[in-house]
Length: 266
Image (cartoon, rainbow, N blue to C red; front, side):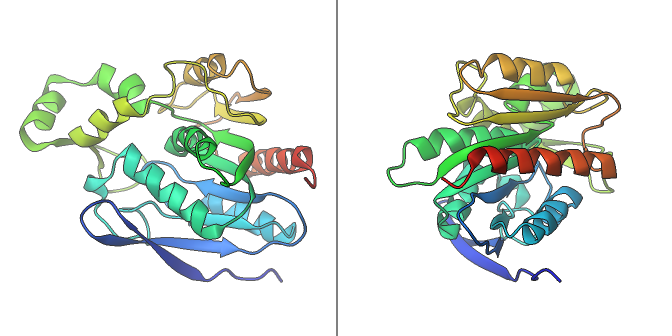
C-alpha cells in the first residue's frame, strides 16, 4: 500500500502579512526528478488529475510536490486578491520549500501558464532546481488577455470599472467564476506569448479539440512560441477542458512516464 502524504504548510507574505500555503510533499527514492503539480484557475491539489499523479508517483517511487495557491483549496488568503504574479510566487515558494534539485512540472490550464513563467524565473536563480520536462494539459498561457478580454461584454466592463470584478456562471460547480480587474491587469505583465519561450527541456502538450474554455488553436499558437524546444502536441479529438476521463488520465500518466524516462538518472 502506498504511503499517505501528510498536509504541511509553508508561509509567504504578499505584502499584507504572512499567509500559509498548503502542501503535500511525497518523498521519492533514487535519482529521478520530482513531479510538481500546478493546478488551474480556482482548482486545488485534490482534483482528479492531481490525485492520479500522486498515486502514480507513489507506485513509481517518485517524489511529488502538490500545493494550493493562496486563496485556493486548503491555503489561506482570499481568492479575489489573487493574481498571476501572486500565484507564481506561491508556486516558486512551494518548489523552494520542497528543495528538489531536478523537477518535472505538470501544469493544467492556468497552471500551464504559471509553469512557463516558473521556468523563466527559475532560470534566473543561481542554484535553483533544474526543470527537466513540462507537461501542459489544456494550457492557458495569457488567458486573461488572449481569451477573456477580447470577449468582454459591456456589462462586464462596467462591473470591472465600478466594483473591480465580474462573475460568470461556472460549468464546473455551483459557485460563479470571478475575474478581477487586478488579475487582468497583472496578466498583461506576465505575458509569455509575446516572444520566443525557451524552456530548455522537452515539452508535451495535451489538448482537447472539444475544449470550450481554451480552444485548441491556442495550443497551436503556444507551439509557435516554442521553436527551440522538443515539443510534442497531442490533440484529443473528443477531449474537453478537464481531460479527467479514465482515458485522459492514462494518457497523462503515459506522458509523465515518457518525460521521466527522457530525464534519465541525471
